[in-house]
Amino acid sequence: MSHNIEAVMAEKKSITEYAASLLGTELSDKHFLEVLDQPVIKQHFILAGMGLENGHFVGNDPSWNPGSSYDPRQRSWYQEVKKQGGFVFTAPYADASSGAVLVSAAMPLSENGEFKGALFTDISLKSLADISNRANFFGAGYAFIVGKQGEFIAYPDSSKNGRPMSQIFGSQLDVSVASSQLDIDGKMHSLIFRPGLEPGNCAG
Image (cartoon, rainbow, N blue to C red):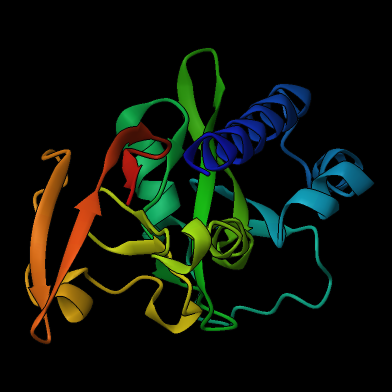
């Protein structure tokens, strides 16, 4: 199951990086839509968009309306990619428009080494939860994906996505420990973690 998650995230990363390379330094809305309005982008992402240093933004979904107060420079994907100077996955967050819990992939857009803005692609956590749900371990357990801060990225009950592990397990577990025993409601459970998944997360 964890290998499937890795493959999905690696594919999302590659497509985002490729889209950024096609944009190049021509950051007009027209060129953006020529690149990001392609079927392969719309098949893999809920939304793709671009935010610039002057606050301008554009998305590839005409129905996307984040509101008049929306400023791409205040979004986690923009701030993280500007700080890192390279590709990033964000931690799960609530979408400004729909309220759905998402993960974004982002790439910096630069000209002559100067940061001009960022490209982002939004990834549905439901698709990752669906992969987790397919791992039933013969009815003896279930699988989940945990992010860098200990929050669920993919859990069989999708309403738990974005929430900390402590809400389910009663404590924030150390995911660096490969296996452990945990008492949940008087019943012992075995937890096994596999670290090293994109984006800095692990499978349990």
